[in-house]
Length: 378
Image (tube, rainbow, N blue to C red; front, top):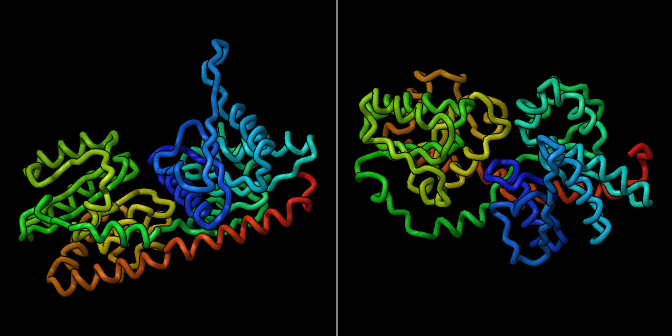
C-alpha cells in the first residue's frame, strides 16, 4: 500500500483500507516517507517501511520517486509481496511502474492497482509539467480505480486514457462510528440549549470556499440562535475570521483548529456546510452523515453521489449562498423535519459502509493477480 501519510483524504482512505484488509487476514505493507497518521502498527498483519531519501547537495529537490521505486523493489523481494496498490497518481503510480520494470528484469511480475483520488487529476495532474507522466502512469497500471463517477469522467476528459477505470467509492466504517457514538454527546460543550450547532470541517484552502460558510451561517443566525464550529487549519482561516468580525458574528463562530475529536463535534452537530468548488468524492460529508448530521453542499464533483438532494440534505450550485441558506433553514424549521433529515443522513451513509466496499477491492486484487502474466508490456 503506497500513499501519502498525511491527514488528506487519500492517505486516510488508504490507511483505513489497509487496516481493514489486515483484519480480514491479508498481510499489508505500507510504504511511504513517514508513518501514516491513522496507522495502528500494533494490529496483526500490518507492516510499515519508511522511504529514506538521502540528501545530496547536487539536488535542489530530493528525488523521492526514485527512492520510492527502489524501496518498492526491495520490499517486494524481501516480503514476497503479490500486489501493489498505489494511491494518488503523482508520484506513486509513476514510481510503482518503474519498480515493476526493475522487478521484471529479475523475473518478478507484480500487478499494480492505481487509485485516483481527485486533486492528483484535477489540480496536480493537469499541470503541463506533469500531464504526460500522469497519462503514462494511468495507462501503464494494471487496474485503475476512481473514487467517484465524476472523477472517472473527469479523468477521461483531461487525459488521453486508453483503458477502463473502475469506480470504487470511498467508504465509512460504521462499526467504528457506532463505538464512538456510545460516548456521551454533550451539546452543552459547544452551545446553549436553544442554539443549533452548524459545522464545517476542511483544510481551509480556497477550493473549500470558506467565506461561503460564514455567509450562509450569517443568514441562519438571522433566523435562529446558532453557533458555527469550524474545524481545521489552512490559508483561508484568516479570511473567515475577518469576515465573521465584519459581519458582527465572531462571538458565535468557534475556530477549533485541527482536531482529533471530529466525531465528537459531528455527533453534536445539527447541520454540516460544504460549499466546495471542487470535491472528487466528499469524504467529509460522508463522515458528517454517519453521525446523523444532514449536509448542505455544492454540486461540485462527486458530492451529488454522496449527498442525496432532499434526502440526506440538499445540493446547490457552487456559490449559491441564497439557496444554501434557504435549504439550511428548511431543514432547521422544526424538530420533526430536522430529525427526519438526521435519520436519512445516516441511512444514506450506510450505503458506503466498509463491509460493502472492502470486497470490491479484494475482487480487484484477485483479478489483477490472476492476470499478471497476460500483459507482457507491463
